[in-house]
Length: 157
Image (tube, rainbow, N blue to C red; front, side):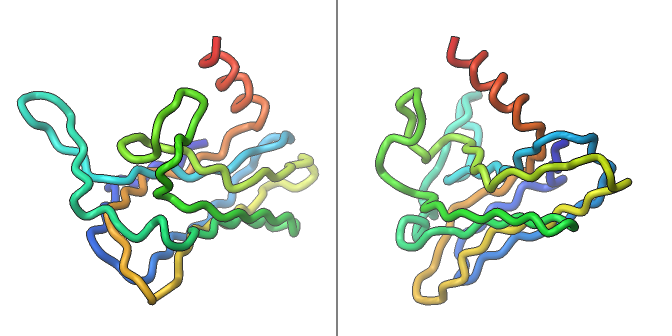
């Protein structure tokens, strides 16, 4: 299940950042992974090519963003990520800037005994000591965890 926002938000400069949502859905019994899809920088086209501008990208390396999920049956997960680290991010040697990155929030289990499951999710960076900017938020993914692993193995072949 993908919750893609109709409009991609691009944040030029903010002090307080919070995205949250919830979905109630009859998930089949399985283990699910929830993740946010984010990008640092702003895309544009120049001479028919897609280029990324980092002019307004700042502040995401100072303090981490907190990601959380909770379900109607009491399951919870949370994690924190600094969104703009200069180190290499993935197994392919890419840096975080200029790429869409899936930030895994956590997993939850649906047993199938309930007709629907409510999932609440959020990402926050509530620190007014510094401004932040240059972030695109595209979508939230809820997919079966084994599908995520199969997808990753196929890419690595």
